[in-house]
Image (tube, rainbow, N blue to C red; front, side):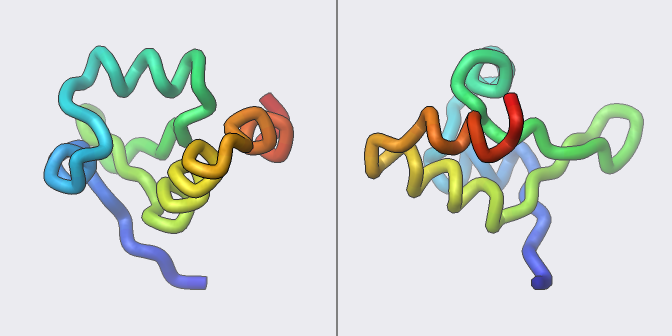
Amino acid sequence: MVSNVLRFSDLKARGVVNNRATLSRWIKNYGFPSGFMLGPNSRGWYEHELEEWLRCRQSGQGEKWLVERGD
């Protein structure tokens, strides 16, 4: 499966998150995908992982995402 790579600006443009502090908190406490490093100061997220996380949150299955990821 080929998936687009999203950057922080893409997350903001989609209305997913407004600032980096919230993003860090979501990664740490709410199972938001941690993404991967694109460079020394750049992080990316696969679009399909973001969509799965959003779908689980909307359906009330947020805990399911954490268990499936092994957190």
